[in-house]
Amino acid sequence: MQTELMTTMQLRLQQLYELDIPFNVNQFLITDPELVQRLDQSVNPREIPEKLLICQSGDDIDLSLYLDPDVLGSLTVNNPEQKLDTSNIENYLTVLEGVSHFLYLVWNARFNRSISLFEMELQAEVDKFVLSLLLANSQQSTGLLYDLFQMLFEDFRYSENMTRVERQRYEAANYYAGLYCRELSRPLVGLPDNVAYLNDLRRFYRLTNRLKIDHISSLCLK
Image (cartoon, rainbow, N blue to C red; front, side):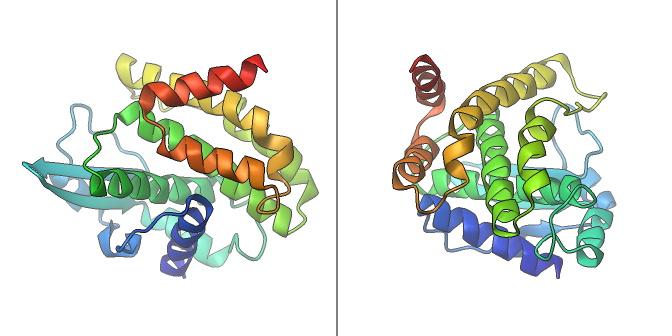
């Protein structure tokens, strides 16, 4: 079931942003924590439930998406597609973050565009908010609709084993994503009928790092 859920997440993101991606995220999924330890070549290889592993050699990129098997298993038992609520949303967001990272990297790589880790985290925060909002709205989960913004951008917790640089990057990504999602939160409930805001999301996805920040700033000044 977890592979179906990830495919559904990928298809929803591709439809939302009009992306043409010839790969299925499940082809790159690994769930073995020991394998992740061997593959992880990052400066600070933290033990976290979601991790996109990237190894680049020239123009070639090798990708693996690690997701904690317990997280995936819990969503098999407590299916968010049937009901997204406080009992499963944390694990749902973990998986969604991984799918978002995968798609954003692959889409940009197809156009030979380099991206920063900050840019990837910023887009993932937006993706988590938008897709969760749409799913909760489709299920008429009124309570979750009101709590979602606070959950993602106010009551979040950072991993204790982050480096200072990692912490600053996540804080900045969360801050700017929160500003953007606050501006769009009310209209997004009507997606995909609200064409103007749907177009804004698609345009935002395609902006580069600095332009994303400039766009958020311009919205907040209106």
